[in-house]
Image (cartoon, rainbow, N blue to C red; front, side):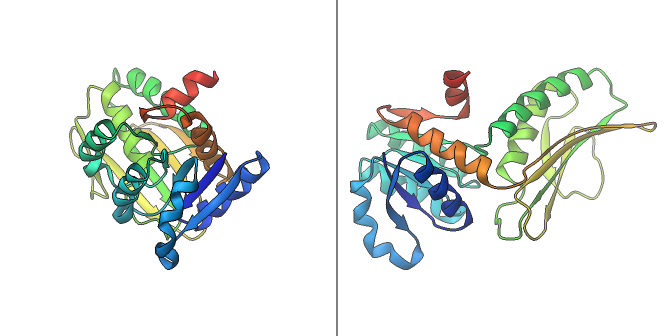
Length: 239
């Protein structure tokens, strides 16, 4: 499989390493410094995009225009999702997107919803989410934290929305604390705190290899398919 990497930062390099180990080749490493080479994307079987919230939507459209399936790991672009979805359907293209490509995180998502359903019966426990990422991550809260919040809200009657870095717990608002520290791949914790104790579940990434493997598996999955796909499609196929 010939892969175009859109974005060649820390994640791009980790994806390259995994892709080569799995027998694939990298035909393009597109960055801000070599945008004049973007026409070479047509030589790829699939593109994997990890850039930033400001660039993601235009990068997706570039892949659609080049008739190249695209796996998107950037987060923070979802305000453009409906427009992207329409273009994907109109142009008969292929998009795989996820807030997090780690298998462990996606298991964590399901655990979070199960716990939220249980805790919904215990109003004395107040829920909160904390996420810690590296200082280069531009969006806050992280896409993973948002997915956790949406999953919790869907299963818990006590919360209707979420807010970031609010000063104190407010009724029916799930607080998310976003912290940025050097060299942290990603740590997410869901807390339920009462006057007498606290229940917490945490996912801590030790490196970016788990995210990179998931992105390459998504690219392998996407070949030959049309439409929009998520980690649920991939996991349901591999289980």
